Image (cartoon, rainbow, N blue to C red):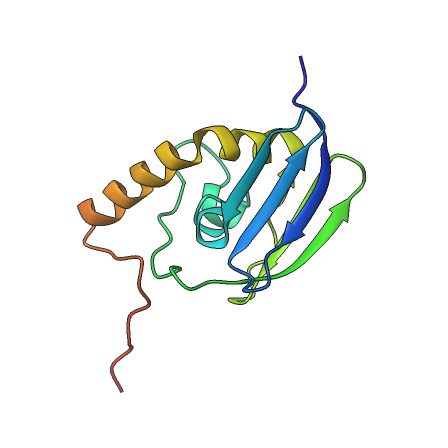
Length: 124
């Protein structure tokens, strides 16, 4: 069975969330930070097993674009210039259903690696 299709995608005014309404009435409000750090892009997921990258410092990232990719997905652009993730309808639905757990695992991964959700200041 395929995931229900979205009937509406709306970026909130503050650009910090993507609200997705699916045809079965389920509404998922997906934080920009979660979308960015769990991006399905090769930059984040790698090109093979064991190559996934932990992306720190994206607490304040904003969505700057949502572009349709055929009738199956969208490409989301962020203010850090990342825009290579193709978010399928089923992936957006998964994040709506499992996002909290996945984000909690991401936060644990950050802590284990001594990283934070905040941007670090580079020494001059």
